[in-house]
Length: 130
Length: 197
Image (spheres, chains in turn red, yellow):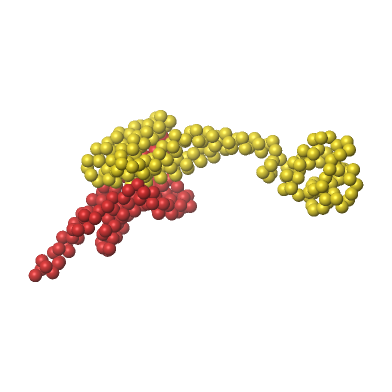
């Protein structure tokens, strides 16, 4: 699949932008009175934006957005069951391994779906059928 | 005490004997003690610079309410000093964490490529974790130490490919989140200090 070659990992600037774009999520949760879950939701949304940026070359496919929606749904348990503690003994930095893992899982899922979809496309292509 | 336009000040500047003289043109003379000028300025300041009228039978004039307005006197100074003390205390408590958060964001923009950025951010993450472990409670320290060990494993993820390439993005995103959270914690400390806890 040619899009696979166009995977572009987001850089630090995109880290800032992603958190800026997803700031309304935190504001919404804060207004609803759950700042701690808001922080988790904010981070998850930021990571999801990073994944979309990574695979932006696939954005013209409907299945890509369907996969992103499914991955977004997978983040919901994080938000529900892991509100970020507001004690000094916990730092958000400790979430870095978890964030890398989360990013990796989502990265792998999209790659898998892309591969499956490209095989399907190849099987349906007129060149192969003829 | 009243304030108004072009109303003479009685009691203090009684020697002018001019009922139409604007209060802004007050002159203190006669037997008035030198402090009166200062008191008068203070009253005018409190009234936003507007002329102040003190009736003859109200000398010395009553002091203005002390707990209102930006120029209020002693009790508010106590309030201000408590605010300053609490702000200092909250900053002292959370200053290192906030500094490390800022450093984490800055590290994302270091020159030298992904490896340098990932190394710097992991280093800051470890420092942040150690700081948290030093200042935290026992349970928190255990969590922090666990986090420290996980963070220390991050360089290994570099050779897995994806991990290191994602760390500059993820590190910066988490730094931003960490900054917001630490500011919220510092504000919470400040509020509990103001409440007297």
